[in-house]
Image (tube, rainbow, N blue to C red; front, top):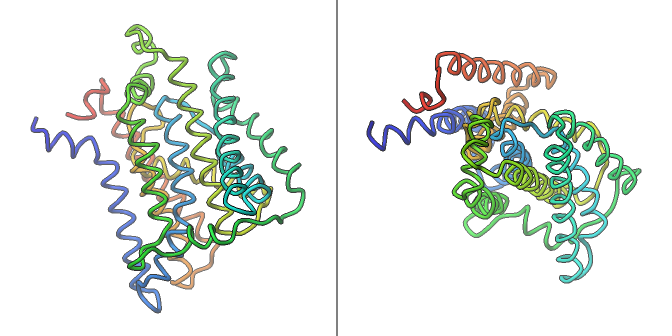
Length: 326
């Protein structure tokens, strides 16, 4: 098999997700009154990047055949923390950002430690810890409110020279600083091995406990980054269980649409990013087509069902995970 064909097969889930997003976005722009301009692109980016980063957070544990149901609540907790701490001058703002990201990292680390040393299923563990994180968020913000460094918020949610949305630059930085090093590291490759077969990974001498802990810790960090960005967009914090639940479910949908297998061992956060943007575009498309917003869950469900069905059919046809690339 040629290297080019192997690369195409390896990344076909990502390419398919990108094609779905491109098609939906093209229909959206062609029906939008003003067409594509800097303001429209910035609005789309500001909404899409939030879900894209939460989807990245969900991708990491799924690669190990796990699932993190707490990402939405870490997202909400970070939003509430940021609305309290990321204020004032440069030093105070920087300190607040460090605390918010550190809190997300700690939440993910706690998830990993309980899963590994408590020997509990990830779905049960993160469901329980998610409730704890939501309780902390509600304690911090019993009612919506707070503040944020407005200069920084305007810069992050605004435009770069040339009309490029600044949020896209932030997303690129997160990909380059978190996903790319993880994917190319020994830990990243070990996470894929664990997702393919934890028994085989153990027999090969892979430090399963350490890899899982690092994976869940990074998941918490990414969810906190998204929560911080939400504060920049809304200029406030809100302990909303509906927001947390919606982002958790949509992150799983984005991961599946992006071509990552829920059985673990195969996928990419880049595909999850395109899957997240595709989901976000559905809502915008329904708006410009003047359709009832109540149709949005139906269309999202149909797309998710097709993506899951195609993934299941593909897995049923193989006897060995290596056949995914043959």
